[in-house]
Image 1 (cartoon, one colour):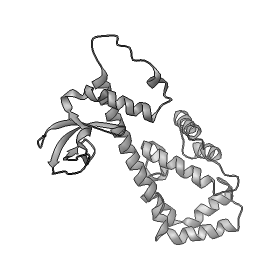
Image 2 (cartoon, rainbow, N blue to C red):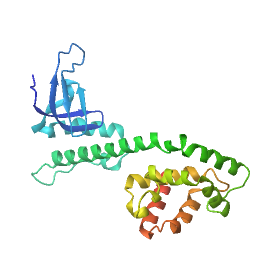
Image 3 (cartoon, helix red, strand yellow):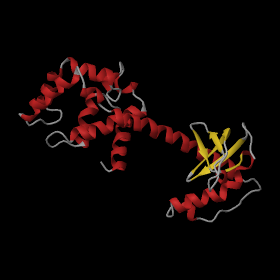
Image 4 (spheres, rainbow, N blue to C red):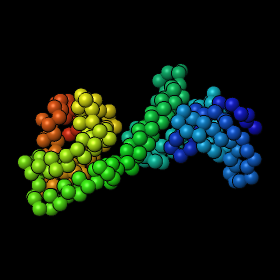
Length: 237
């Protein structure tokens, strides 16, 4: 029986993390679930069989690797036979590093999920909605090409609403006093998705054209431009 405050190690699905027991309850279920734990990023109830002593993390290695192999059967590294080259077993350290990276990536996924849910929400209410309604009317009567004079005219129709949009949406370089240099990686990912989707709304629009136009527009460095291009290729956009 574990006690409140016990340090444990939790493995569930392809997830593993050090944790602390923060609540205990009776459990008549099968399998039993007596313990609520806290990790660096979350709190949750876990099945008893998913918990081992924190001090013996290496003992969960076999289970963890089996789960990885089941999830990624074609991964070349997982197909290789492990070779012990020294008396030191780095399994625990490597496993802990993997789990910490997984936690950080999940935090990024969570932030991006929030951004996806709230993207351009300010366009749905005053003062932006009426201005974007007018822009859509203008687009309906003009064959607008991204970056063209007609496109610039369309932006002028938005007037103060566009300033409001930039002020409330950090995925635009105009949100920052120092432009694209003020953006985070999360801003850049949302920006790139925005450019991809926005380009599809214009005649002959595409992400390659948008990148080329915005390279000069926002003073994007060669290095950052290559990163954006590589990301587009990796995503198949």
